[in-house]
Amino acid sequence: LARDDVTRENSKFVEEVLESRYGRPDPASGQYSPLKVAPIEPVTEWTLGSRRTGIIARKIGIYPMWLKNGKKILTTLLHVCDNHVIKYIPPEEWTPLIQPSRKTVIPIKKKGCLLVGADSTNPQNFTKQYCGLFAEAGVMPKRLLSRFMVTPNAALQPGTPLSAAHYRPGDVVDIRAKTMDRGFQGVMKRWKFKGMPATHGVTKTHRRPGNIGSGGGKARVMPGTKMPGHMGNRYRIFRGVQ
Image (cartoon, rainbow, N blue to C red; front, side, top):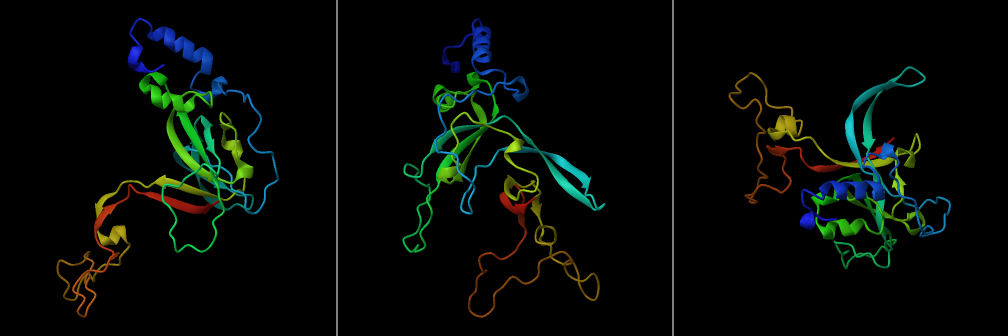
């Protein structure tokens, strides 16, 4: 179903075959594929060391809400768009990209890798090799892919749909996303510096960082010194969000 052998005459026929096999990309059309095999692991109760999979969502905006006691809070609206489990790699077969250091003494609990995809799209826009990644799950090719490390008792079968019902109200989650791009900014906006005084002999240095030297015979700027530079457009993790 790649674009290599698709012409203008049979492109409509290919679209009809894709719709009959997978359904429409819109999750409201009921295109969720049923699971054909049993779950990978037996269903067990949640334990303190269990780690479930996450989902891929798109930020919509900020919306105010009020609690029962009248307190106003700001909430972030997220759109969970057509999430499916694509593949599960057990701990015995998973090889991390970054190997642990030899000095590591604390034993690390082995976790499996769960590949989750979101936002179904047209297979004609991708190569045959990329579309083959989704053959086991039986779903349309996804525009976004993400890996989640899970414990073996939280493994899911490829093809399992994931929605907002994956979480319950009051759950505490960790969010990873790319921050808004602010461009090149000074220290007052980038690092919240107070700045120099406005008067009393200060000239043209009201928004400058000041001295950045470390003194003595070091004769260099220490790594990590807060200075002007590019702000935003970086992946950050916000932990403990309810």
